[in-house]
Image (tube, rainbow, N blue to C red; front, side, top):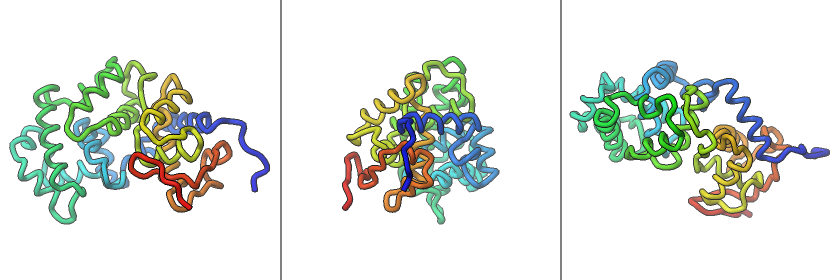
Length: 262
C-alpha cells in the first residue's frame, strides 16, 4: 500500500502529463499515428489523408484507423480527390475487400467520397485550408463537423492533434475540448474529475483543470484509459496519475451512462 497520495488533483496530474506529451510533439501513439512508417508519413505529409484518418477513427483501433488512408491509397492506386468523387464504387470495393479496412464497409466509403467532394467544392481541394493559420478553434471545429462522419468527438480530437502535433496556429485554445471517448470518460469518472458520465460534465472538468487549453487533457486521458485504466483490470500502481486519482475503479462507462460493477 502506498503511504501517501500526491497532493495534486487528478486534473493537475493530467495537465502535467499532457504538457510532457506536447513537449515531445506526440501524435497519438508516441510520435506516430500507426506502426506502418509509410502510413504515418502519408498522414503527416498530406492533409487530406489526415482528414480521411479522422473519418476512419470509429469502431476500430487507433493504429488500424490511421493506417486506413494509406491502405486505401494502396488498393486504389491513388488518393486523388476528383477520382474519389467520380468512382464511389471503386472506393467501396477497396474498403470492403477482404481483409476489410473498416467495420463500416457501407458507411465509411460514403463519408470518404463526401469528404472529397466537400474539399473540392469548399476548399479548392486543399484540406489544410480548414485549419488555416489564425483560424479560431471554434471555426475549425465547425468546419470539421460539416463533414459527414465527423461529430463533436472526432472534431475535438482532430483539433487537439492539429495543435499539439502539427503545430497549427489556431486562435482560441481556451475554447478547445476533449473528445467524449470511452477511454477519456473512464479516466475522468474513476479519477473523480466527474460524477456523471455526460458530455457536459467531461467538458466542464477539462475547462476547470486547464482553462487556457482544455483540449490538453485529451491525449493523456486517452492514453491512460487505453493502457492502464482498463475496464477489467485497471493497473493503478503503474498509472501516470495513480497517486492523484480517487481510484473509483468500481465505476466504468457504457453507452452514455455509468455502469457499476460488482
